[in-house]
Length: 247
Image (cartoon, rainbow, N blue to C red; front, side):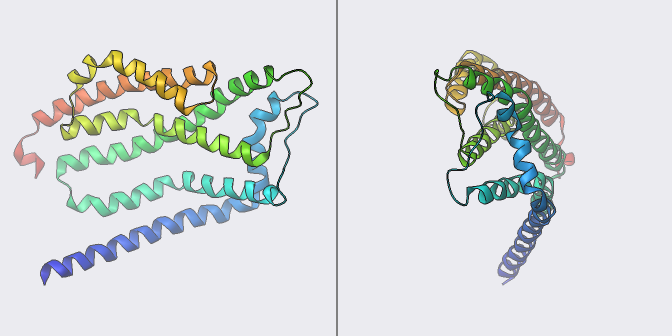
């Protein structure tokens, strides 16, 4: 009976946390929806600056001029509300963690959010200008590049997710070292395979040009090295913790 009451209590707590996370995203959306058109113009700036004078963005579907900015606003609302969403996740799992686990998870939640934002910023300010300049430079003569706004948005969101998730590599490495799935020394031995792997991932996750592939692969390699260093520090601290400190 006590177990059933405990399960019900946890389910109620989970429902409350999920509702708060949803409301935080919805609140950000309400704040941004008025600026939906401006947000789309901002996200389209890298392409518009690279397009030749005789080209422009177009809407090939009747409702795409409304739904594309609306969809962008929804996605950006979730991105902006990620700290609040992670805070609710932390509030739900924290009571069941040991002291040393809390010291690890709290910084990781903050770091994962920051790295995801950095990945998106890197894509917008570095990758997009170079990639779009390359795309527009190889347009065959006599062809006008009139990009559909919905297709462009899908492309941009895909790149945002690819770079945002790729910048989470250090977090994944720290978690694997912390849980004992691997060790920093083992990862160092696999460095040649990792280098090949990040370039393969760069080829799969980015458009088919060497510029954007390299701009994703090199940061992934650097982040891998950072993750190994941080993983070594956490592994060393874990060994130094006494059983009394972990309770």
